Image (tube, rainbow, N blue to C red; front, side):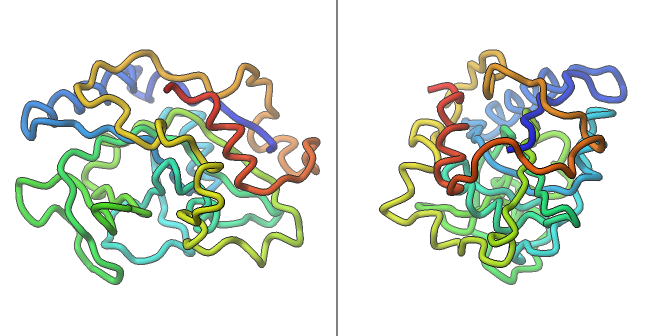
Length: 240
């Protein structure tokens, strides 16, 4: 891991980002009975990370490796972090960028692979999933990008050279021998069914990571480890 960065509390309009997100969650709950807030991983580019860290603004360009599930923003559920790694674009220095987010999912509908859907099919639905019982992908429509997604942390990872061309397949997400190592089941559940959200979680005690764009190209100081172990370590800092 090169760095874990806490995102800014304010956006470029000096508004509290978390407060705006919580208000949206309350609106969704009042309209549909449950905000259905989930943790999810968002694959992103260095440009998107820079924009978030400098201005507190979420601007997402869909990674080239993401599968087509409509034309919205594709995220990986908390227990499918390997999917996010798999879909993240690798820069010239072998680095990938991911954001750990809270997402207002509300009422979800199935969005099939290859779909061109760009908005809810009717007013009852808020977002999409690829599977209702065992989702590996969350789909947030573009119009809800800034209202339904709250980015909390940026994680930057230096890939070993031998790993760049052998990233995991999405079947690894729910492999029975590994799923429990990716993220604890409690963190994959709804953050709060009744939306009594507490303060944002701390994802590790130290944030003295290198500044973005500075020494990012140097080799990581941490030993190499399987991605499952990496995200298991991160998951211990999530609220239960």
